[in-house]
Image (cartoon, rainbow, N blue to C red; front, side, top):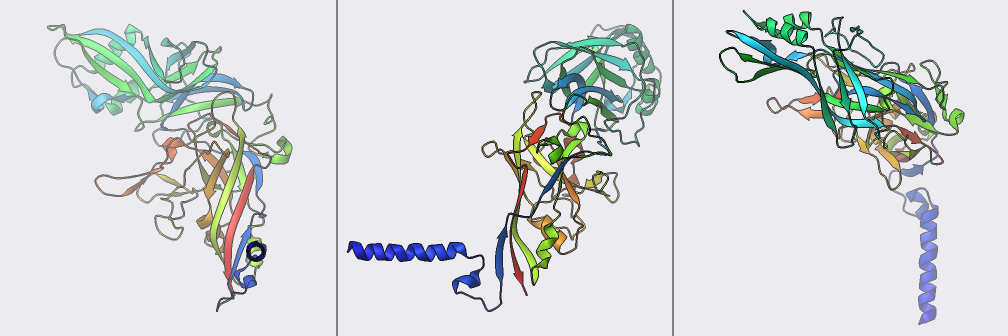
Length: 453
């Protein structure tokens, strides 16, 4: 009995060995009526390099930066915020005799990056130059402001977030209150008088704060005949120009030679490639051997394709970005986009989820966002649709770049019209958290595909 069982077991092992050794179904004696090959490859090359994006839009983002931190991986970063203020309700008017009380600026933060062990000072200045509502401000933009600050705010950085305020000059408060008298002031006229604010870090700062676009100037007053306190807010908002200027000194890092005209192949940085979106640093991925698949006889269909990116770690300033998306770029490292018909929205060419399509009018409305997986230390993208679109000639074999994001969805659906709204811009370029890829390889592409004659 035992001999029979051993014989059967040996036969089963032999059969399994044959099955595993084969690459195509026809090799196991089951040829289909139409010759179909089922193939697998993990040898398609992924060329990686660290590049600097040509333009990093920080305008009207969900987060504004102020502060400074000397990052040993990415370099010394210094950030300022510039913002136009919106009048609560769009206009400001008072009636009767009113009395000025006080005015202050309030800032609230929900993000910190860097050394959080010390209290930090930031300064609020008055803009002397108009902000342009038609302009797209980037991390290298600037707006002129008065040299003397209006006030200083002291913040104690904590991971849970916090807020701070500073008393503004009474002369400014009376100036703003004066605008409300008579016929009052509307937003357009208010902007001419008070152009906005710049928030600037102290030279000794060791932390960068992220403000969720919630900076308020609060004006308090009361009627002469009533001691009840009244007030009005002037605040930054996504509806008005606001942006972060971010300067970086990489001279003491592996990225010292990085520039707009000089990318760094992985071989130049010990096999590592880097991502830090708010400063424009990212990893570029190319697939130079992808079109070799078309050399197989017949028509190619991608069944499943995964791009695995292996993370070595982050910088001391903050944790690894929890979410990542992929964008297509041109040869000059500019992210490709299409203008949305009837709006000013730029539809960034992000790699889509598999359910999306590149052949319909709303083809960019399915952006893929993946979460960092801490156990295998990877970001894994489904690039099935993307690779198939290249093989059939719908898309060019462009480079891809990594973009950290702070939202799991980059689109929303209108509650009234049901239309899809593209919302990538507020949630990219808004974090300094960086990623270092290498492990010992930094990227691997795995593809399952079939072909027919």
